[in-house]
Length: 69
Image (tube, rainbow, N blue to C red; front, side, top):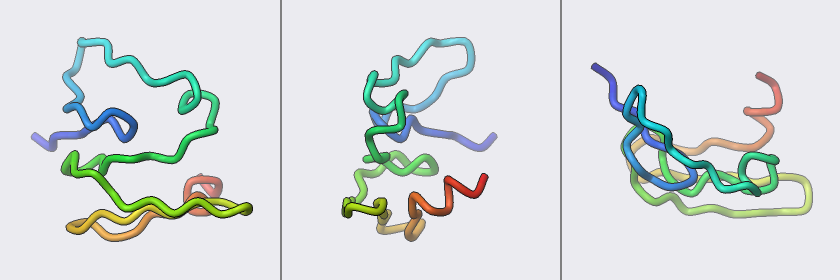
């Protein structure tokens, strides 16, 4: 089973258990602070046109990547 983590709280996601997402994150105003794959804290850089976040194990994600989904 592949474990997943909340990108805003860093807590492991447990099916059937409610995990509150901060209001600013739910509105898309906050970048993820934790890696969804391992739960580690990421380095986050915010700029006027977006953001990027880097996990030491899983690399970089950018806001532009998420907008394309």
